[in-house]
Length: 269
Image 1 (cartoon, rainbow, N blue to C red):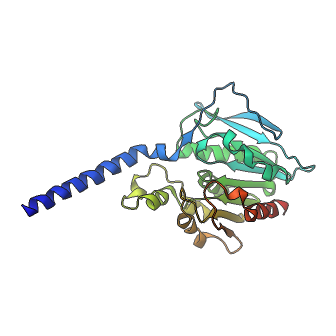
Image 2: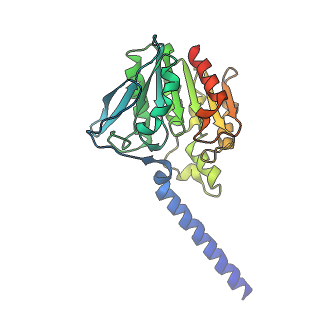
Image 3: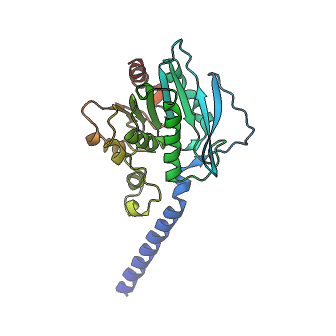
């Protein structure tokens, strides 16, 4: 009788484990991406001077890019800003003033299905967005005037671009080691390395980056835990920086003086 009970609980446990694992596999895009689409004739409205352009990637993918112009008297270069996984450019436009006041344009693309961008979200398409934005910027600015910036989801894309193309600086805000390792930080009992559709291995790309790297991460980040980002520290070069924002979470690093002062100093170099 006791053996039957044990066997029954084993079956229940295995069934529950498998059911959750299957659900996680098929729902992982739901966890990773939270886009808000906009109609094609939607009109952006921002306080910073800007222009919107359309950037074709392939026959089915057209990327909406907003170029925010420098508000300083001199334009030093351009920041390629790869944003996070929520909504669209409207959500992230509030951050551009930190760059435009320091003499930089900010070019911000929306990923496929975000905002007015069309096409399917795939890891390869995310990389193509990064490459095309870089090539478009490099046609106007020399590589030593290009800063590659990634926030949250965008850190993997930014690291990918910087691993192939030269730039003045790579700046990552709240990065992850890789998507499988991030999933493992949340639910460690599954083989995420094999089951994750998206890899975005920031750790692999950073090993190939020759550009100086600065990382910002908060200790109270529950979306991308600090411990996950901290795994990137051994990969960094001697001159690179990993800046810890005590008490900072995933959304509010920009309110901290340490973040603003360090970012200003990087942009003034």
